[in-house]
Amino acid sequence: MSEPSPLRPATVVQLGRGGDRVAADILTILSTRGPLTSAEQYTVVDMLHKAFEAPLTTTAANLVPTKTLALLQSIANATTDFTLRTQIAETQTFVQNVKVVPPSQPTTPAVIMTKMPFDATFNPATDVVQPSN
Image (cartoon, rainbow, N blue to C red; front, side, top):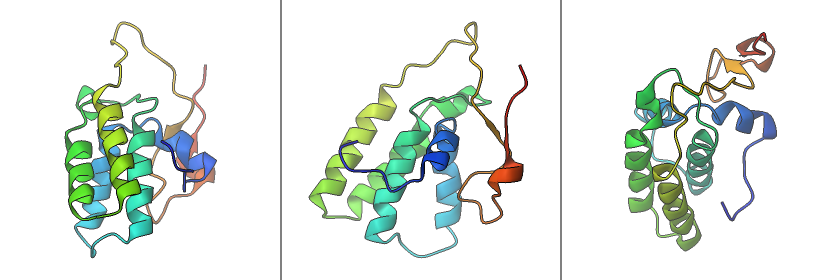
């Protein structure tokens, strides 16, 4: 992405494993509140991009960006900000071209999360676990 990320480095590591699950969680949160502010729109687009940078999910369904693409399109329809629309287009292209690691070539996650970082009860000390080797 061309703009600086509004996310903290610890959050980036945690999002980088979520895939489409991140969009599903964001959509759940959005169903209980009003529309996103301009700053929140930028943050959500960045979160969705980061969620597919190193996807390692528990289900293959999370590697298919169905909810991510729908959420990105929804944000694009709600803004006239040229820079944001450009970032949305870049993210749409990126998530559609993510290379999936076949199941025969497993990878080891950097961390295991028990909650998403934007969950109100998220605590990095207890919700992020280093895997044992």
